[in-house]
Image (cartoon, rainbow, N blue to C red; front, top):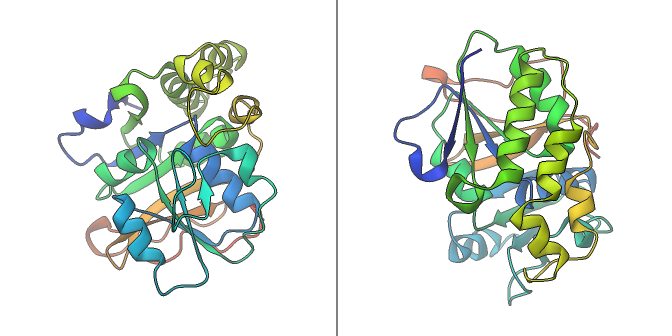
Length: 247
């Protein structure tokens, strides 16, 4: 399997298969949202769009980076999310890096959003697409975030079937700038447990597939069995999977 690792700003053409990585914290948070019962996550392009997507939909929960803000229900912290009851809810998520990266590759034939907490499930799904080249989008720090690159490289090796010791990759993430800023409380809207939760390898048994649904980029959990549905010309439509493994 051919792989490449690029930053969001380097996305110049639509890849066939894209894995968008944001360890600290967007896609760790997304996985926790599914674990807390969320049905789907709509990835918003701006804070205004997130609020507009929530307006008129009482079942929707809006989530953003940074401190709490009017109109938003949650902040981008896995520790603060782990006690939330999101059963059957739609989450609207807007973050600085992760959601931006996913939207940059929205027209790819397969888009996976990933972090260490769903690493093996992501690699397993990629192994079913072994004939395709895979583009890993490293979202943090303009493509230089070592926690995201380490996670991407680990998933790539696992997808290739390599027996890989995760300790070194997790160690790089633990020593990253993002981890230090979270531990020191530099980033607002965080919790002291966030770093540890972001470094939990394979906490959840599902991958996360993003696809266009009625012009919106929608993220859903996906576990085994049936491939994500595809529409004309490779575009995927509808639900990636209807499963309870992430509940």
